[in-house]
Each structure stands twice: as structure tokens, then as C-alpha cells.
Image (cartoon, rainbow, N blue to C red; front, side, top):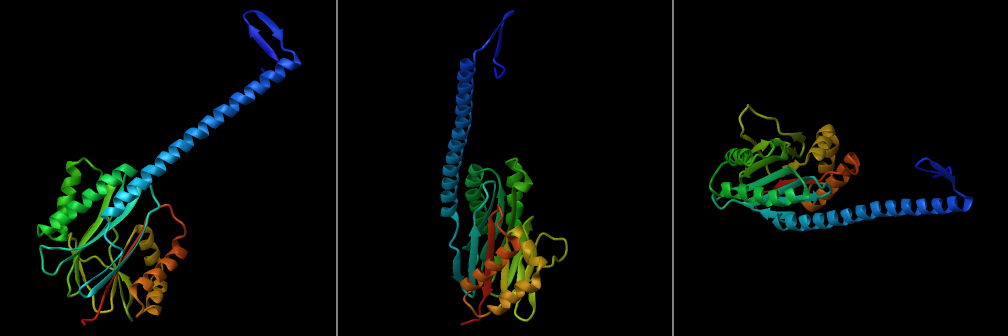
Length: 276
């Protein structure tokens, strides 16, 4: 066409300069329409995705507990930022009615589509709470959860979770299914990740008044363990400040270390207070 030559059967006819200009205009219009149609379809898809994401976020937000709470001797503050469409971080904190002294804390990550996380997240939360209120230990709760995962033919990597029981004495008994272990800050003793003891599913640590326990997502965990002294210094310099302010200071420092990521961010801080 650009040579101004068309072949029809065995005959050839050369286009005039005017006809070539018309063909070029026609081809240009077709190209513009094709490109516009492509971008229009992409815009429609994006709008549909944004609506789906917004709906999913609303559904999930309704099931998440508040980002701050005081339960007995413990104050909890949570930072939760959603950024991913496929891998979502969640948390849960509740007083277990099955025991007189049992605060249950969970942190977990679900890998699925937007609709998938919207369905799985409330399901995981309800299963955790139901089994906890039946009196099961954290390891027992996760053992039941694993059975459900296998029964529903889900992939093990689709759900990584840590579930624990916190007592007013400061004892935190937990079990983890692929989720990072807690870190504990003690004034004068620095910030340290929990060291696994033995090969059992159940692990434990003991907090003292003034101690801060941290549960967090993978990206935050890596940043913390790679520079423990620096983050311990942040906690030390803000000792005595409200936990909400301390959380903000930690998030600023973590942002400098991790940058802008495409994954969800989760930081759960639990401080044990002196008895009143």
C-alpha cells in the first residue's frame, strides 16, 4: 500500500498520488482507532479492578480489629498498610472467652486474588477464633488450620500464619506456620529476635514490664534483623513516650530501610506496663 501498488488477480494498477494520500489517511485512522480501543479496554479493566479492590478493602476492613487497644497490663498498637492486590497481610487481637487470662494475637499473610483474599480472610479469622474459644492451644489451632488447608486443596504457601496466647504474667506462647517469629525489645538489653527452642511446634517467650514485643511482615522483619542496634536505639530514645508515638517513629525508620514497596506492611507492637 505504501508503494502505491495493488495486485488483483494477474492485473496491476498503480495508484495516483491522491489515492495514496487517501489510503495513508485511512490507515492512520484505523491505527488510531485500534490504539484507542486498546487503551479504552485497559481503562475499563483498570476501573473494574479498582472497584473490586475498593470493595475487597471495605470487606476486609470490617473484619479487622482496631489498630489500638489496652487489655489489662498490655497496650497494643498496629500499623497496617495495604499495597498489594495479590498478597495481603492481616492481623487479629481478641480476648479469648474460653480462658480467664488469654489474649490471642494473630498475624498472617494470604496469597490469592482480590476476590480470594476477601473470601479467605474472614474464613481464616473465624476459624482461628472458633478453635481458640474451644480451648485449643495456639499449636492446636494451627494444626486444625492445616487440616482445613489440605481438605480445601489450598497450597500451603497461600497462607502463612503466626498465632499466640498472651498471659497477664507476660508469657507469650505461640506457634508459627511460616510467619516470622516475634522480636522483643528490653531496655538496656537491646532488640532481639526470638530464638527457636527445640523442634516442637510450640514456642514461648516471657515479657517483663517495659518490654515491647514486635510482630511484623517479612519486609519489616528483614529490615529489623539486619540492623538491630539502630532500631533498638529508636526504641531507647523514645522510651516512655506513648506507644502510638513510638510506633510512628519505628515506621519512619523502617520506611527509610525498606523504601516504597509493592507489598502490604504490618507492624504489631505490644508493650507490657507496670502494674497499677
